Amino acid sequence: MLAVDECYAEIYTGAPPPGALEAALEIDETAGKDPFRNLVVFHSLSKRSNAAGLRSGFMAGDPRLVAMVLRWRSYGGPQIPFAVQKASAALWREETHPVQTREWYAKNFRVAEQILHNRFSYYTPGGGFFLWLDVGNGEEATRKLWGEAHVKVLPGAYACRETNGINTSHRYIRVALVHDEKTTREGLQRLAAVL
Image (tube, rainbow, N blue to C red; front, side):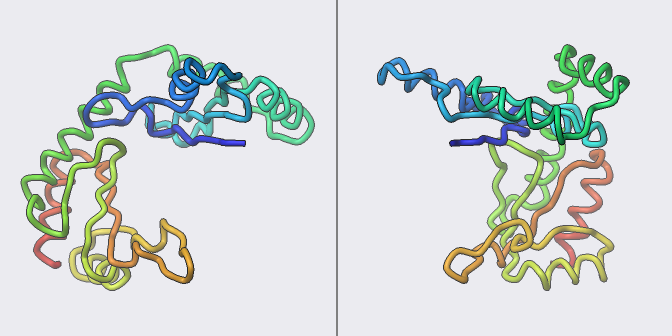
């Protein structure tokens, strides 16, 4: 079974990324198999609509797997309150705010490019709202940024797992570009000055 988390699917900086269901359909055209067999995707309002508190999303794909999860939820899963269902449905129907969200993040990436373009192996990612900056030691940089610049970041190693005893993300920090443009600029200027 392949379960794909596509919660960032509508947070992209260029062309929209293909989804797993689209890829499965394309493969099915050439292979002639059941395109969604053992495949499910998950979407969430957390990133698309900046509504993490709703804890609302959906699952799509292999009808057998969807039915299995639905059955499990009817016995042991928490039920979503009606007010949350109504709010969720309204957000899924409304298509302009994800565009505005992408524009919000695009402004912050432009600020980041201005301040960090030739430092810390900076690059603008194709999606999401995080920067991964190579600072040599993510934990040390995180402590320094918090103590001296009052900027909160996450050591890269805390967001990635080890493989064969090695965590290649220990050199990095993850920076979330989620604040308004002014706050983002000030935070990145402090980061650049301290590091």
